[in-house]
Length: 281
Image 1 (cartoon, rainbow, N blue to C red):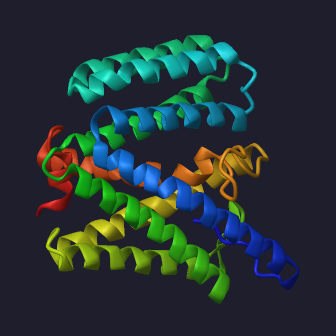
Image 2 (image 1 turned 90 degrees about the vertical axis):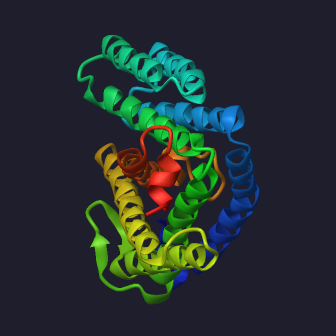
């Protein structure tokens, strides 16, 4: 969730930034939806590329970007794990990723916790995203539901924050985010649940509950990423996406939401029925 300062002097730059953000979204959103619809290797390829990008950006933010062997090691492990996930050999994928944690620990200089944390962050995004889509019955619907909840939490927060302003949510971590923006994002995420329920894609009360939980997770994920950047004095994780910064800046809320969604789905539907476990109550 991104909320610019409301100062008049920043209005022009804010409008230009909004146009850039919208233009990027027009390109990226159809790509994400198309890959999600195709599923299988297409979705796994996109997710794995994003996971590798998240790991590399994490290393950059935390100040260990000069360790090229570390970045290559993490990227290779994530790439090796992807086929096992697509082929539903979840145990093998988790073993590969566990070995990857050991390799990252050996490759990184002390303190190793930040490098390991970055790899876990990227791996969580990869595994959760692929697991949700593996469900042939409800995987695509569940994935679109998660994406829309995250996007609407972001959009609602952006416009509510600009229109209302008011008290800051957590100024020490993210000085531009407001309670009004958080509420706006939360409310708009509930609209997604209502829309799905009205179209027969789930029951109203459970979907409202799931959307609520995922919206809060998305906003907490945003704050977590902001806290990491604040810790290392970094404004944007990179500039790979015009108007949005880096992959971490764009996917912070999604990573938290899809991880929680995957956990809920696995608990209710097992590793092969994550989408059904999330959407069918």
